[in-house]
Amino acid sequence: MTSLLVAEWRRTVIDLVRYPLETVSMTVVMFAVFAGMFFGAHYLTAAPFGGVNLAGVVIGYTVWTLVMSAAGFMGSSIQNEAQNGTLEQVMLAPWLTVQIFLVRSLMDVVEMLIPILAVLAGLVLLSGAQLHWRPLALLPAMMTVVTAWGIGLMMAALALLFKRMSQMQMMLQFALLFVIMVPVAAMQGVVGAVLGLLAPLTVQVSVLHATLSVAVPGISANLWWEAAADMALWFGAGYWLLRAADTLARRRGIVGHY
Image (cartoon, rainbow, N blue to C red; front, side):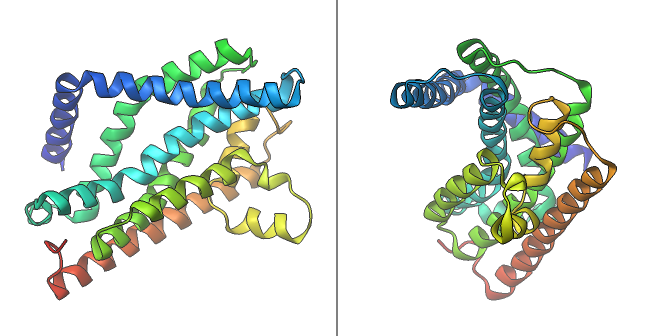
């Protein structure tokens, strides 16, 4: 396993060194999208932004960017390997397929940290949002990433069987944007209760907001346990689905099919 970590880390560093323009362009695009949303909303409403809502939007957009990297990387990686004709070589490695793509996703998140932190700093300067940084916020952030990995494993399982998942990933982007940016956990009625129970990431994002003193005044022990249970549920489901899809793809002989 150590050799796999080292190999994927070397691959990540080589990509960063060989294609620095890709990283810079990605950072600029992420910042430009939020700037367009921010000034567009300000122009349409002609109202000043500030306080709790603005800080929540900044955190939500940053979390969405990180989640999309963690959730979308595995599926797109399998699609690229299949399209390039190298998926069989990857799956013949002496590690489980789920281990390989989890390590790759981990390195992708590490690679994304610098651009995301740069974008977050730019968003705070642009919007004037007030965030209270605390080391405790790292725990719900890690829970959010692990939950996103569970979703990514599900997408990887579908990509392993169906190969082309571009439209499905686009749908996932909009679905996760709604879940993260809209305070689903605070919605009233049956719809709010169902979405709060079934939708992924809602509890983790609520805890993250609470640790940064944005939307929730305090964090109860039940909320921590609920976030941990939700994380374990989604990650476990994704892990099992990819293992099952791996077995089925090998049995049907469709690993190299595109």
